[in-house]
Image 1 (cartoon, rainbow, N blue to C red):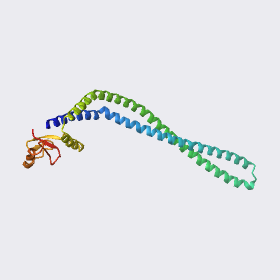
Image 2 (image 1 turned 60 degrees about the vertical axis):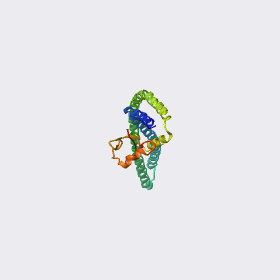
Image 3 (image 1 turned 90 degrees about the horizontal axis):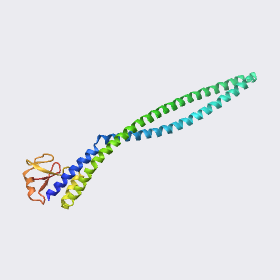
Image 4 (image 1 turned 135 degrees about the vertical axis):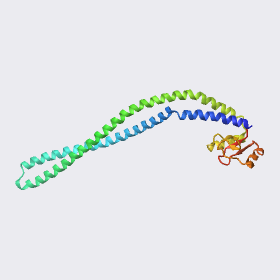
Length: 232
């Protein structure tokens, strides 16, 4: 009975090793890395496009307002040429006020234009980098697909063996095993080595060792690591 669960554990150990080797593949890590980079770049591109639209709208409004004030200044200049001397001071003040607003708008337009240029530059840089990263992503993806294709038959074979082995197990013993696995214990069953736990190497007391003779499966639970100890 114990032999069957040990066989099951051995098969699962091989399966876990194969799956971990696939999960820890450098190509897989690079696929994940470049996938995240591309997602971040795409998100940034969308943000820049939104910003560019808003800044472009501001630029159009500021430009339209600036042109409007230029026209007002032209009209004011003509009115000043024919104005009565008593009104010259009023016109001059109005002209200065309009000119100040016009200069302020001109500065705003320059700042907005510079902002547009900054956005455009970053956008182009991201597009260029994204194209290069896409090439790398595709390369690592293809390499990982090759590794995966090589590993999957072995993994599938081990899964089938594990299922076949599972069908021979005592249900009670299997439930205990699965509970330990849920608690991230592996291996679950370890041999007794010189009166020590084969997992954590803790010394097992004589009274505890005596329990091996009194239970159904001839195993005891390590008080330190929780693994199930059997005697070879």
